[in-house]
Image 1 (cartoon, rainbow, N blue to C red):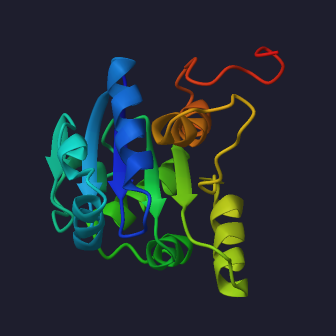
Image 2: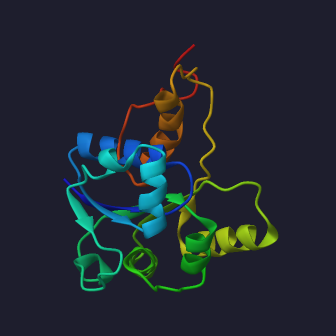
Length: 184
């Protein structure tokens, strides 16, 4: 069992976070949730807050004394799902002004898995440069772009096509979505 951090910001797409949490826990992992205030508001609006509050631990975004604010803590990685462009810009430029951005900074400096899932579109030049900067620093940027290869029949199944990719990049084995070519 590994310990993962799940960051949730104010971008639309709280279902991606809720489904990521579900599958991490289903795989036996301990999950600490860090939500921005806007993330809580959007999760409420989209009907996902109750699901997200099933996390094993809920951390206060203002608590710089949480263990994950230090490189000496033992968490395996972090996913920021969904990630607003404001938070993405802070992470890309080393602005660790809350626990979520600090934990992401810890991932980068300690070379741990950091998956960023922006849910904004279209991208402007600043967004693209910030994604490039995060990628060069070691993060993986996975836009919330679901696919239709597995012929999803529900909104949850469609969201799971993105969640499977997130888990793959956190090195969490899963069989949520069949591999390409296996569903013919």
